[in-house]
Image 1 (spheres, rainbow, N blue to C red):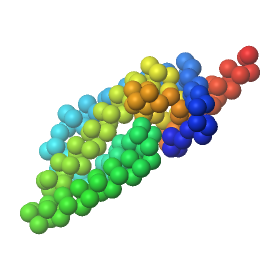
Image 2 (cartoon, one colour):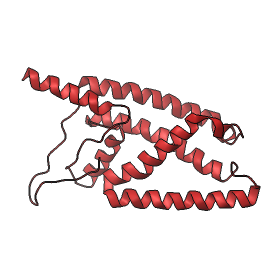
Image 3 (cartoon, rainbow, N blue to C red):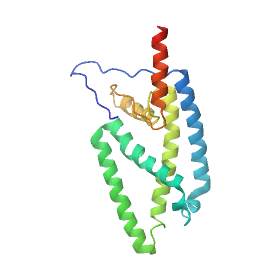
Length: 187
């Protein structure tokens, strides 16, 4: 979901309901998993990523695809507005295309440096960013997608308190809905 404040001018933006202990615990667990993955990818290094067998590994493309969507589109979009998400994604696409052409011309093959450097940096940076975002989401109690924690922090630093919970591919938003429903029935 994009950050859209539908409140009229001058109205107080609504605050997101905070996550409860179940949502925070799941985010903490997922944060530990992404911290481990960040360590593993960093430890394996660029040499591992640049191997000719790496493009056949579907996890490399899953992480890279998630990195492109969440880091380069969704995070700027929810933190600074939809136009920024589109701008960052378009600029990165142009950088990847130019790097791919440069790599192909310089090496005679596509899976070589500097394209592998760019993609490895993006994927590894994304795993680190998600780990940090999980921690922020636990501390702030941000509902929805873990990237929403970092986006909420950006919005708070900018003085913008209006937001919507971000849909989450892993289903964290479902846990939040369940937990919020349990709170309502107890009241």
